[in-house]
Amino acid sequence: MVSFMIKARLREVVDRCFAQGVQEGLWSEAAAGSYAVEEPKHTGQGDFATNLAMVVAGKEKRKPREVAAQLVALLDIHTDLLARVEVAGPGFVNCVIQPAVWQSLLPEIHGQGTNFGLSKRGAGAKVLVEFVSANPTGPLSVGHGRQAVLGDAIARLLIATGHAVTREYYYNDAGRQMRVLGESTRARYLELLGLPFSFPEDGYQGEYIREIAQALIAEQGDALKDVAETAPFTKKAEEVIFADINHTLNRLEIKFDNYYNEYSLYENGLVEDVIAALREKGLVYEQDGAVWFKTTALGLEQDRVIVKSSGEPTYRLPDIAYHREKFRRGFDWMVNVFGSDHIATVPDVLAGVQALGYDPAKVTPVIHQFVTLVRDGQQVKMSTRKANFVTVDELLDEVGPDAARFFFLMRKADSQLEFDLALATRQSQDNPVFYVQYAHARLCSIRRQAADKGVERGAADPALLARLVEEEELALLKAMSAFPALVESAALALEPHRIVFYLQDLAARFHGFYNRHRVIGDDPELSRARLWLAETLRLVFANGLNLIGVSAPESM
RNA sequence: GCCCCCGUAGCUCAGUGGAUAGAGCACAGGAUUCCUAAUCCUGGAGUCGUAGGUUCGAUUCCUACCGGGGGCACCA
Image (cartoon, rainbow, N blue to C red; front, top):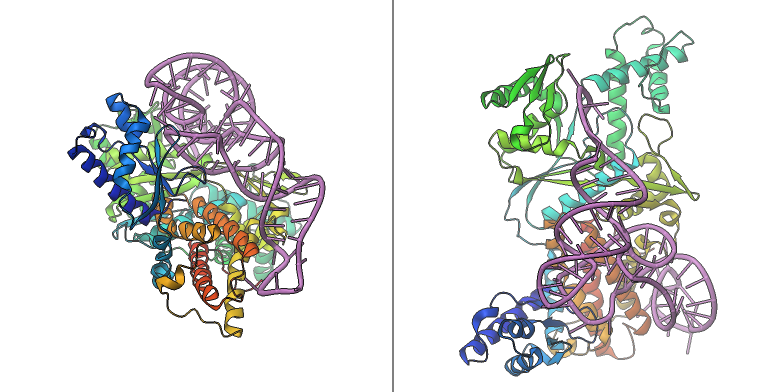
């Protein structure tokens, strides 16, 4: 784990030593800016290492270890920060930080409380995070679930780093898909009434359509049996399905700030307006009765139809209009989360906004790969049109929101995710979400014990904290100090899985410490020092779990 | 055919232009008079898909190929 604050201090010291070496004629300035201070891979190689000597030696054709020895001499006097400095391997200089420096972080972190890990890095930049965006044609599938959790976690991370975040759900309740939905519902309605019916060829076959039809019968009997248009069926289906989607999102505690209706773009003439604007730039032409967007003029492989010969726009056109609105609404950064099956929509939309004079670099797509569900040793195939897909609701029934969120975030978006239902359901040590939550619960238990026994932390005097000298204790301090930089990098990279890995690592360190050392023991001073450690650790777990939307139970 | 993602331990996956590539699961053995054993400790396990290239140094960057997934609509 990177220890950002301390690392920054060390970096300054190394920079000063480098400059001093230049002044004293030990080496030239050639290596300036091209050396690194980083964390070595293996324990026993210090807290941090620098390759400065190797870089200098490379520039000046000298022996790396010889340069390293000179650097060590310069670093050695900084005893306030460094406990030990040594040459290692091909010419690395390994640095061991003073324990007191690590110990001093404890009251600092604890003092920040729930703010520890937060930053103002985003400087209030307006960020739009668009995710889920499922049209109301059926319940959310497991794939949507991954996206919902991913998008929400990204939003949380961005908020934590000082961005002004809007969570947005873009949907369309008009058009062909919805017509088919209405037709499907009517067919089931007629079927349930025992009347002749014809089910649309590409209709929605899920059982939920029957339930909607059943509800219509319960409300209106057979009053709709001679209604030719699909509107009343579509309306009812949309109502029920949207309520269902929102119910599911509520179970995951995901709330959107805004629902943006694609249809409003038509109502306000914004779709037409995009065509006009593109036409003005000579990027639109007619062919075969359709309207084409000349994307080849913008460096893409082929031109695309934006209005079909039937007069209906393709998805690209309103998407471009929608994104132009995002820009017009003044967002500095637009994050679009969607599944890899929609990957093809990206280049055309970006080309569109660029043609309209906006900077496509402000749009960052986060494309997640598919989820495969493993149940009873078998993969469950998913398809929205078929009846046999697993919904997020069913998943939540089985594993609960904490496990669902944690598991969906255990892989980076780029990787396909195998969701092991058996593992997520298991209430045992192999289940990572329990492992991490248990660490928090255990720390709460220690706190309760301390209260029962009347042991109080007292003041965080350096002399008291100096008792924390065990390897496991210093490792925990280092890991905690790395948290803010981790949150920042996870947020800027839009990669919440880093938080999950961090928490698992921190939990492993804590459980290891717990099994080797007692917090509340015979030595009152040591107990108080360790209570400081435990309480601060609990805070980091709570903050970390909160960032990914997983609960931090006080007991389990 | 073209484009995107992935290929790392038996399985699921992290990670990195540099020093001995990691974790969890699975497997084998061990730990509890004591703060929650939902825990911990020990052990084996790898040509980092293959072949070239760039580099002082590549598992990491580039190219080609192989394998898996997704896309290449006047569907979204």
